[in-house]
Amino acid sequence: MHSIIRPSAIALLVISGHAHAAGFQLAEQSATGLGRAFAGEAAIADNASVLSRNVAAMTRFDKVALSGGAIHVSPDVNIEGQTSGLLTHADATAHDIAADAWVPNAYLIIPLNEQWRLGFSATSYYGLGVKMPDNYSAGHFGNVSDIKTIDLGTALAYRINEMWSVGGGISAIQGEGEVGGTFPSRNLIAKHLQGDGWTWGWNVGTLLELSRQTRIGLSYRHDLNLKLSGDAIIGTPSGRELKDTGSLNLPLPATAELAAFHQLTDNLAIHGSLNWTNWSKFVQLEAELDTLPSMHIKDEHWEDSWRYAIGMTYQLTPQWQLRSGVAYDASPVPADRRTISIPDADRLWYSLGMGYQFSPNLTLDLGLAMIDGKKVDVTEKMELQPGNPITTSTFQGTSEGNAWLAGAQMSYLF
Image 1 (cartoon, rainbow, N blue to C red):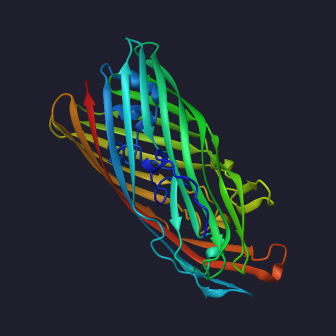
Image 2: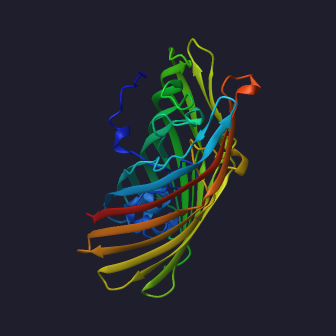
Image 3: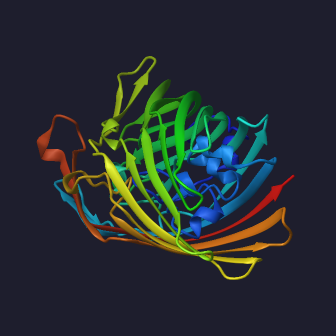
């Protein structure tokens, strides 16, 4: 029986399945953006959800703007392979290891005067939910990796002149995490840590409006460490459990986006984004315990990653707007560092969306995306008894993750 941290009601608002941007990063901050593969998000500013990508773009709103919605994530993540070694040799296939999830969001922009805008946001930028089946033969490589976060932000934007705006914001980030491993083909805990915590972050942005048809946005979100404090267990093959308390520092990387928007005709616009994530910050997972020795969970050594997206928006009628987009999400995990506990690979996004304007003030947006993840080879090795090479166990196989995402969002101008 493993110990359970008291659940946070706030964190449970954002329950994330298999991460759908690079690593365990989430891109799903709005259904509007979902319909265009999040291409041009830091520059478009068609509703208050722009707060999630570029706070400087709030200056495009002259009325109080409210947006809220949710995205449903339906992942299909599968592991195929075998474990082998002196102490283990078995099939290690596991299907559908990531559960469906909802990712909600809410945004509010308040004009203070002609130059200043104030914004509030609630969304999530990181999440992961991977759990292996009971009695899994490769459970010693990780049987659970679960991360839930919520980002509560406030921001200010200032219009310097007709062309240039700047902005900055701060966020309170709450998170819960659970990581662990079991002994091969048994549900006995080998190591387990579950905890929660808070931290603070900041972000800045700028928007350049070159003309009424063209604008460019640039934003940056600073890196931070989320310290998850809670209960830990170190187990033995006989079933004995040594319990302790401790903490795990979870690195959340810096991100940046360069986005452009151009209105080609009265009806057609094109837009795109280039996103960078500082995943090289993610070196290892290691828990510091209060009385027992440190619990080394896993080496990671990821690399910085890039995301490329391009999309189109077409105004079909005064009420109906159509959107589409494609994106390429490069994995931060080097081929020799892939793991089954955080399965990750390059992926392609294919998105469609639409918006309907009920009135000049009320709009409904819908988005749908299919994410096609590449099937990749995975090889992992570990010593079941650290320091004893003859107990080395090897997983060799493949991982593959695809997903469908569907979202809805309501926006209102007061």
